[in-house]
Image 1: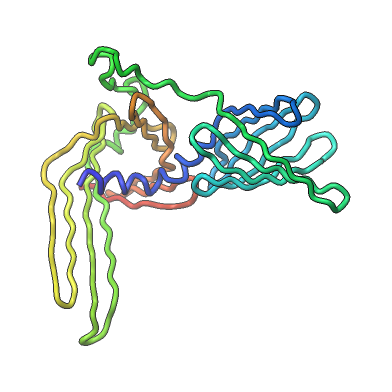
Image 2: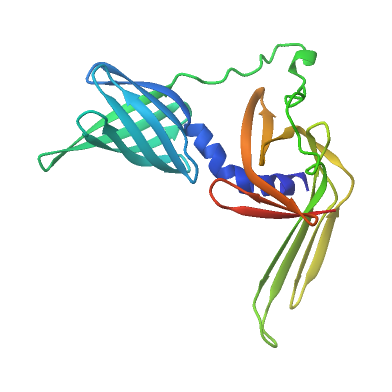
Length: 260
């Protein structure tokens, strides 16, 4: 059931993590000249940034999906516009830049290399140095968030007498511990149809290693450590009332949780 809970968290994190993959500082070469590019998330599946060569500065606006980027760069002084299409692979952003010159489109291929890659933990380091410490020990945590919360989902298909039909319901428990750690509580799944039925349950509490939470204002964040690399992820704005917590991600997606 651990994977089920992480899938729920990924409901928020998909767009955010994609943006973080694109975010960073890059360098490339255009016509023998060094060019720098800096990108950062701009919410709602968008990116913003700055591109500089030795003479000009461009403001960058782009959208992304998966490892693909599409947008434009506008030169600040003269208003020249470059259409951008890129593909991110590992630490390289392969970009096609197209400019319309008197009705004639001219394109050039540029490979930008990321220059601010995180350094992973040394695999030969002692086990005590590789253990994951609480990275949010000094962060604030809203006491109203602390505790167990349940996410319920229901899906059905088919209808009518003698028609085939099916339904699936799941119940997952997320536990926000007071020290900032997170755990998965009891979970269950039930599936039924016109000629079948079944269920599964997961009991007990399983701490999620490397996953911690904290709050800033009315926003909920996760700190996730994997393979020695720690990322801070904004889940979204949260609102708690009458035993319910509504979390709204930056892309507008919502998740409703119920106090257990």
